[in-house]
Amino acid sequence: MSKKYCVLSMFLAACLLLSLAGCGKKKDKKKTDTPAVKYADKYIDLHLHLDGAITVDIAKKLAELQGIELPTEDEAELTKLLTVSADCKSLNDFLKCFDFPLSLMQTEEGLREAVHLVADNIKSQGVIYAEIRFAPQLHTNNGMTQEDAIKAAIDGLKETDLKANLILCLMRGDGNHDANLETVELAKKYLVEDGGVVAIDIAGAEALYPTADYRDLFELAKSYNIPFTIHAGEADGAESVKLAIEYGAARIGHGVRSYESEEVLKLLTDKDIFLEMCPTSNRQTCAVEDMSKYPFMDYLGRGIKVTLNTDDMGIEGTTLAEEFRYMEKEFGLTAEQEKIILENSVEAAFTTDSVKEELRKQLQD
Ligand code: ADE
Ligand code: ZN
Image (cartoon, rainbow, N blue to C red; front, side, top):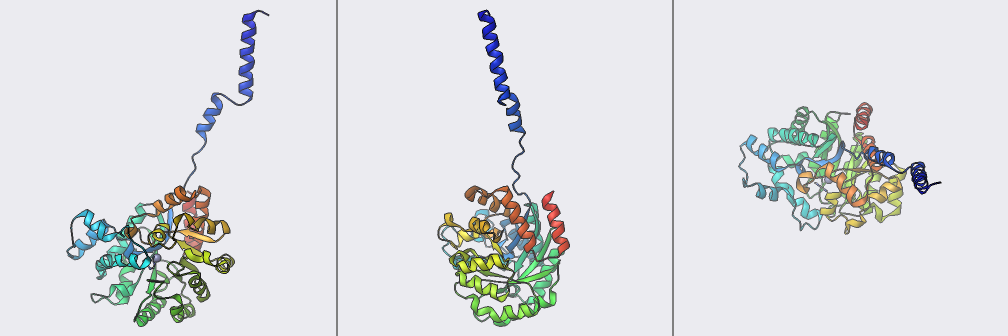
């Protein structure tokens, strides 16, 4: 064989080997054809406080509607007034941020419009279902009764296209036992399976007013068959979560500190109790000292039914989409895990089976 043919046949043999090995253009093309991982772009927020979801935009609209003069017109100053400062050290500090947004919701029209605007806002961010919670007793400073407040919030739901329900919060605190009792009675009166008041909760300073002090109220709620979630294991320890489960809570608000007790972790899995976790809130209130030890992924891995929520998106300066992106970036949350979390949210929702079916369909689209 001449030298020229020898080189040519070596070249052809090399090409054959390369194509048998799957190298070359075809493989490159296949690589670029691989579909991108589809992270969540539709969300369910089960833990969202109305007074914590007032953005600057919404505050301006509520003030204008009611002829309320804002303390400042300056965007940056208003943002400062509505959001938590970087030096927040505890839930007690965090809870000081709510007076201003609450001052804009002391009339029926203010409260109704707040529900409407918050619901529209989160819908525009990809939320397909939300349970908006508020404490009727915090809206009675200018003459509204708790019942007026509940009716106004229900009217607000009718003004939005977002599929949403309401949770009535009792409040931890001094001297408000009668007000809390009234909220339970009103929850019984207004309870529906969907399209209004669907459950109760208790919010406020857990470290100062322990869950143990509220047994009678949740026993009453249980006797009325009112579903409930309880803020627990956020500023207080795992014992608080254990009590909430004992009272009959179907869900726990946060439950971050459940890791302090193996017994409580086992109760959560055995009883299929859902955790409404809210990472940015937990970081800002220092519910965990070191965020690198945030237990969300551990709970998920153990099969605890965790859900991902905002808590107080206005005060925290977040959205539910941002909470998902945060968990992806900081903790490697995968698209598959996001599906599990959203399925948990559907299962945990205080609504009817038919609404849940509809939500499952929407999540698959
Ligand atoms: N009210 C609003 N946000 C709260 C939280 N994270 N804990 C208790 N009460 C609240
Ligand atoms: Zn909360």
